Length: 255
Image (cartoon, rainbow, N blue to C red; front, top):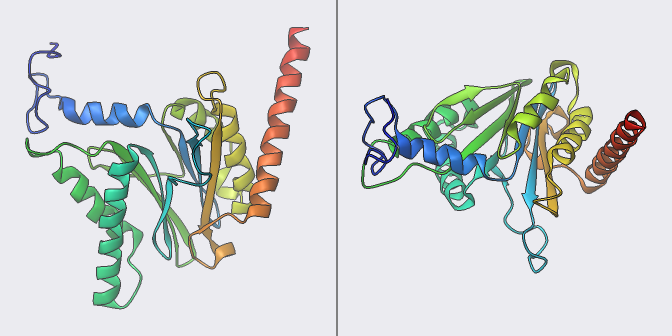
């Protein structure tokens, strides 16, 4: 039974006859059309990497970041509409601040994930509002254990060892699945994350991009931070060299 174009996509509060909520599906499509973001959970922390597309040479470098800190120990990467994600960042930071004020300790990522997912789900229930057009990846390092979750526009949270969102998510997931993540340190995963972003980047359609990298783990003493410039430069160098070697081996095979 197909219900496309029969008026069931005019409101987020309405189901189609075959049980679909089209407004949520459209929001997920907005995520699928955005730049790629990945999160990888290693044995001593979580690494985020984002392909921030540069659509104009006039843009200021470093503007419109797609990686955020929600609390000192929680990081977030996003895919989809940046303005929608910023709204969720404000909500998450308020929840984290309220928890710290009330209980005197950092908010557990599981609790924060549940609160934000409830907020996202609330925006799928009423016709006067629309779902958030973004997916977010949350990562933290608590009591010596890394944790990572992904929330999609429907408000459903999933726990992951490795996740990719955005236009090249399938290719990125394939590359992530090749890694032995649970046995790798964040120092090793930073290089692999940079390599994956370079591999899945479409040079034909999207010529220029800025690579954003951040991590949280024992190397940062449990604090979410951007990867230092020297380590980031080394990771990008490794990624480009690996990509060049891959291209050379393909040319040899064709010859």
